[in-house]
Image 1 (tube, one colour):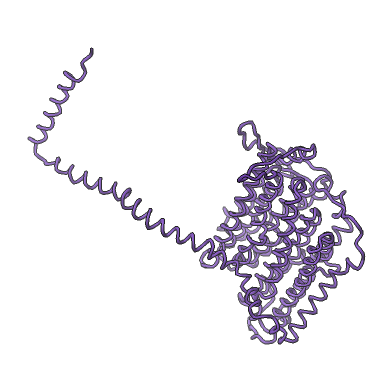
Image 2 (cartoon, one colour):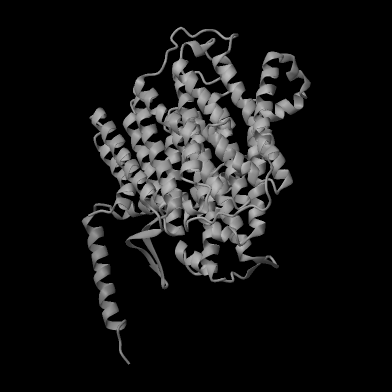
Length: 625
């Protein structure tokens, strides 16, 4: 019999394969895909509630090289089960939503197959017991994200966005692979259990010579692994793919870019926390990058005009919060925020899909139907719940997880200031989105605007419940912030010193300040002119990261490629190699034709010469001493 753990992982794969094989029976295909994901979600919740201690389910041997054994296994602990319920629950809801959203799309069956395949790779990633299996899932979700972002491959912008996401992620993956090699070189194994046991025993990683400098292997390993995480989790520098990835269907954005793939980097840092704890330099790098990302993305979101890109930059900013928690050794808070964020951000993405669907595909917030909150009240109400949860308003989910992360940065002055500033900006751009989308009195009314179908609205109620109650239940009922909840999967570090009530209230005050600023700028539009025009251009153009990468990497590579094409491909390969072979064949054929004269006398002469040559060879050519 197959174990529950095995079924949790493999059911999405079976759903993808069977669903696609039944593509000519669309309804049956949808039922199969959704039911298999639903079963995986139910089993994942069972494991989450039943698991108390970590264990591994060994499946088969994968690699046996030079005495090193890598086995395919399913590693179960509290961290794994938390990620499993996030992945499968959100995926199941997105599958149901997609049935309605993609109703008129001819590729709906293929889309659900991609979603199910993505879920399988994500489950393989979070249940991995070693770095090799994790890398397999890591690359698999990268491939599926490429397919989902470029799903509408007839659109040039979608194919470019998919390629951009694929290339940027490969940059991060190269560093991740190098990090895995450093880990293997240091510990002589890739299995998590063995690595963590060696760390507990005081294993000395040593140093390595890099261009004449003695670099501690622990620092090198942590930094390389984290750069790999930067690619998947869209951190500053490798973030440029995430906003463009909104070219894919909205349900894909909700699954990939809110709840699963982009959080894989946070999961990796949390899973590797014993290694990360060895490197204070690595932790400082994680903290600084996280702070820079959450501030940068929040500032850019303030002036974006595309509803999906605003939510995308919001995701980028919230991921920065999670890495800030990892940088302060609060890995449990990072996963706590990951879980609550999955609910309210998936809700916001799917509601953005409802808004776009209701407004005839319009994504620019300034061009939505006039005062459309009256026409789509259900979407409007849920959008407020999701936005308030994102802002961190009590008692919604974001209040519990985000405020704890801000408090965890209290010992780092710059970190505490930046995280509070980002809380203010988050509140401001969330209110701006709500006002411009639903209370725009200056746009034209779209006559065909309507509320979405029930199949698109009912799944959102589940996410709404998560956005409202998940933080409260996880913290106050299940005790997710306590060490007992995590058992041996994560170490919960108590922060030194007491935090006063005034400090605890600062994030709430910053949220209120953000609401006030948004109101003032919307009420008194002339205030926008006090912001320097140059600064507005920089923010609107996302600090010119795309243009900078275009000039530094893309254009030089195009020039080099064109030079190699002209000098090597055309003049050497085509002219001398391929052309030379072709000319040699032609010349041989031309001279060979002359031999075929058709005269019997000529053929007889050639045969006679052959016989004479053979006789002479026999008589004089094989003499022995």
